[in-house]
Image 1 (cartoon, rainbow, N blue to C red):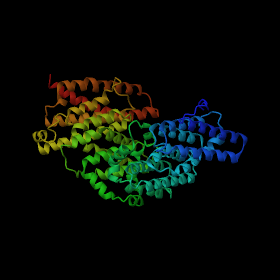
Image 2: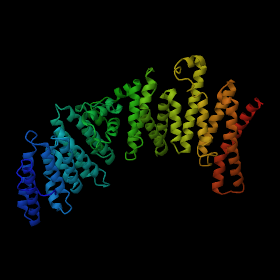
Image 3: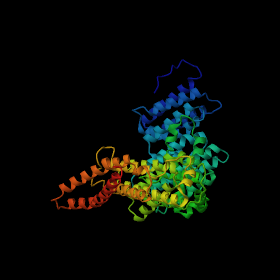
Image 4: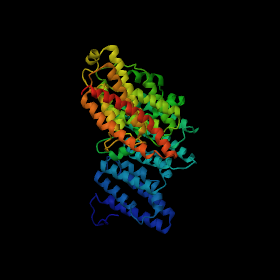
Length: 569
């Protein structure tokens, strides 16, 4: 506790502080003596005192800050009896939040007092204590604490989750109370929306989606969305979250926003829950068919929706059921090209590119780790559809980034096969429309960005000449190497057949491929074959089976390149 104030100093700004010290001292003495009646009276006197000095009209914010600081220091006293803290925890949260509206300093100290109580008292007790705090400034102080309590309890690994369900019921009761107070308060309504989205995440992570209590809870939460003016379209595009955040969160409020760090995930989950349950979508007052149709026809909203799904696919805390429905949702909104291309397509994608890239990485994780073969197949189809919609000017960068950020040989092989399909698609387009018309058409603003054919060389180079130096490691990198060789051979044959004077067939690129890719790889394969020549154990046999297809394609590439180089002699 701070130094004792001089009792002879009668200045008015010290009297409240002196009175507070006397009350706190009486509380300590009452507990030391075991006088329960006196301790209850002293705590009641403290509450009465705080009520008298928290009036926003009569109170001086400086005095108020000093009073709150004194209480915080009292609670932090190392020798303070836990019984005192437990007793105060039932009264202080309601009392100190009344100071929150006096100044930012008061709000900060009040929050610190509540944090101290949460840290030292039972979270379950604290949640019920906080239920009555509803006005915006009070709610803004209370919401972080409530969410911390919910997170602490809901993420406990306990097979018996009835208490967790009870806490969620209490949290929804708090939301109801905020709704009653926020009818004419836009900020309070926005705060309620963020609060509901954060709880949506906690329910999704901590409860089995098949639990008989889960759907009713999510339905209750979804019922708040219309009241908060939140729509599925606004949530899945992220626009509603941005709007609410701008209303609620001021400058330099990173600490406050930390308790709402998952609201974007909550926005995405709100929509995915709707696709999982008719009861949920009805509670939200939404039409999923109309939503999917809107996203199919509006490319800007579609990119925003894909970007928001990054909060679901890579999450290790969410069950595979959510990822399955998120993949299905992605397949629906990329079903066909129902949108009209416009000049804004490129800028729309560019502004969402980092988040779309993160979503694609998440889809790749589903392809790699999902146990369900159906889910893996659907995720692969979704990956191809999204990449197909990426503007040509960005497609190479996206695929290159996906490859360089992937450590799975098999997945890199899959990505290279997507490149091959893009090359073939463009070749057919050129043949049907005519090369000149294509060059003057959709790609006029960004020439030389087609997959035809130079960019293929750079992607093949990533695999056959890794940045670590030397040829790629085999057999562990076998899938990627085989796919890269097949892609190179595919492009070589296509260019030779059409007798194109392209970069792929230039003397410099042929010599580069021959000297930097093919010959080092042949040397490596020859060495491995020599080492395993007299080995007949399982590992040697498996290695030979892995490398044989690579050898066949490699020698075919070498023949094609050598034949073409002879023409330059």
